[in-house]
Length: 389
Image 1 (cartoon, rainbow, N blue to C red):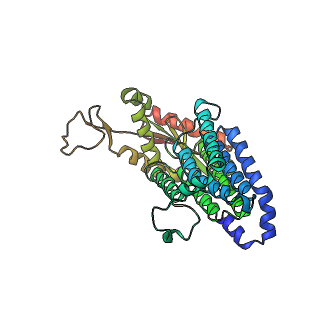
Image 2: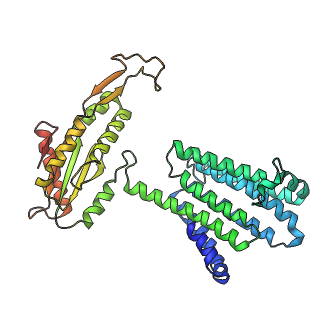
């Protein structure tokens, strides 16, 4: 968005106009292609909405003075509907394009288009009066061509997305908020066809980049623990230098723990262990390897050098007071809590760790990882909750 603002303000008009000829098509085309390739219905419908809004504003603006009323109605309708539509897409989950939910979204968009066309053709004067109705003194809004109804819709969309950002993860809400900022900039200069086209296309570009980032996160980050995933470890090993150590850590008796307490509690254990391993010293970096197994990579270190750091993180896991919620325990703390054995139970979680370094016997990353795995097996066989080389 900052780049679009700078380009619009500092580049000469001919350059901006020339760029605006192909920029929207490239962005919308790339967005639709990504939406199809990765089955991202949010992206698909966002591209569709932004493209329709851009087309409607540019088409009615080109009609000139004779179409001034039609343009005004179209502009205010887009200003009311587009922010709410984009916010709704961000708040609802992925439901597919050619599914029942996808068809319902197509129907909703078609209904909005039909509504705007009907207002423009049948009752433009009355529609303009309603859309530009002033509840508050107009002097407060002289800085914007947006009607008060449109500003209220924009404020509602921003508030909904801000709440999502505060109370849930922000990978969806954050780009949606930036996209709304670009939509607002486009609506602030409605008679400037180049600005409208550029800013709406930039909103689309933000959504495209958000999908690329989400796919990167899914490929390289573990969704449960937040640690880099196995793929990230493999790439890190390809780029590492000649000297390094790899440690493999495994949660002791995790399968038995899962059977006794359930997968939800097991997931909490993995998050806790992942958080502790992420704090390892010695320049180490923790990865989720798969299941209950983790990996730690120490560039420029030998196995002997990393042992103190591994012992430290092993003790940190062991000393963590992991409390299991009782079945009858309420999710929220009551005003007069009563502590009973049935509601609180602490268990000790431990990890076994095996570590290996690159040397003459094992000089490829695969060989080092396998050597660390063998050391991990020895740690398990030796009684668990220990570090072996």
